[in-house]
Length: 276
Image (cartoon, rainbow, N blue to C red; front, side, top):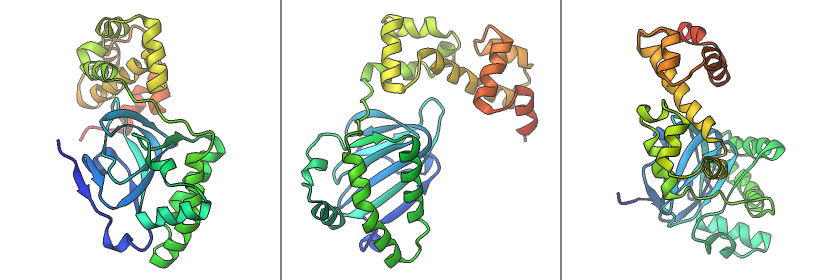
């Protein structure tokens, strides 16, 4: 699919644009920026970021700098969704900030992939608060003033020694993840995952931890429990039957995973989400 060219909206050319999006469905399809930069911050959830031909996992705290010409889009990961804040700004604002900081713009533009990092702890809360505050400035002049004070701080965070680029998800792993979307596969669990991967459990665990920040078992349990929630809402099966349909061998373990995921028992989940 060809990437769509996006241009900075006219009302953002004197400062910055602000988008607070609450799902993958609200984001643009594959696109690139003709005349502006962007950074986005993941407020919650997970998603796949397709950037310059590769897939990278986004999680809460992901901060990514997008340059003009970077081709990117988003898609759901393992039935997760995400919420993000996106800030678009003109090229001259970026160049002015670099000049103020005394740094070369090539630090951000010479690599094949845009700079990114994952914040946690105080840094996460601090950046989140600052970025969300942009949306509170409805006056263009106030927003521009606030943004010009904030941009050097964000550029510094991206360039700081703690920044680590997220690893691109290898194509073989991406294909494996797609195969595991089939309920006949994820309900069979780890043996099926290992069979489809053609690798050892130790190697697969290393890859899942490196690229997805979870174990293969955690990945499978997420898929099973999402399927269980669907069945609870859209079928007449008893809870114990759903437990075994989804591949769990222990009802108590099923209840434990379900409550850890949804914050309630399967019975409470049904009561709180009655079918229409």
